[in-house]
Image (cartoon, rainbow, N blue to C red; front, top):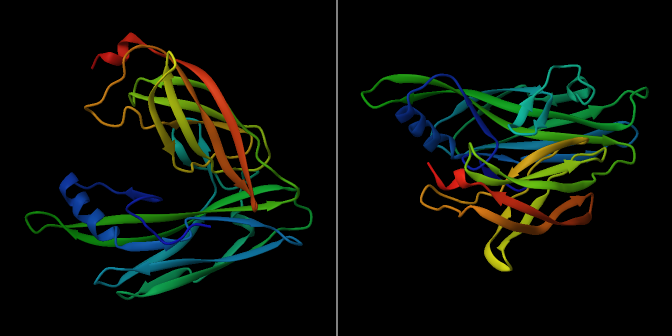
Length: 276
């Protein structure tokens, strides 16, 4: 479980068309809205599981929000991706929650209670959904114009039935020309999702070039995903073309048990990486 976290850092999606200056104003206000936990992982017992999501208003104005669910996955290159209702991993038909609308005064926290009921005929496996709280905020752009922003805050829920586990391995490392960063291809051949952190060390000819860490990142069962190292980490930094060695470990939890998986792969930075 994860503690109370400002939306400005994670799990925030914006929809709607706004000018960039108005978006900055809106982000300032939304960063004062909190939600916890951001990730819920549950084991179904006799086909049932339940939990609570907390939504807090740390602004000086009330807001009204509606609550709804969607199935989701994580794609190889684009991260979070909604799915159509009815996919094999879809939790939404079995998920009930209350309330469906929230009125939250300034400085107040509200609870969304949910319960999962899996039918006896349902096969063992992992079922997933994201619970969104969505509200319409009127932002005042420079010049005094009022602009409507639809903001969505998502909490991912994983419910597992049966003896399931993740099995992770790093397949390779490569240069992402679009992002201009190093990326790891991580494969999950298990039947449960995981959220591994990555500790990594980049060497060239035995000399340490850089060390770093990737925050926990979701990868669903029987899939693969690129993890960006965030290196080089800004527009001013660069990396010389050549051959490198990238090593480290994946670190995640399976229930209460910590898991680790070491890796060591070769990496080639192409000559085009030095040009812009």
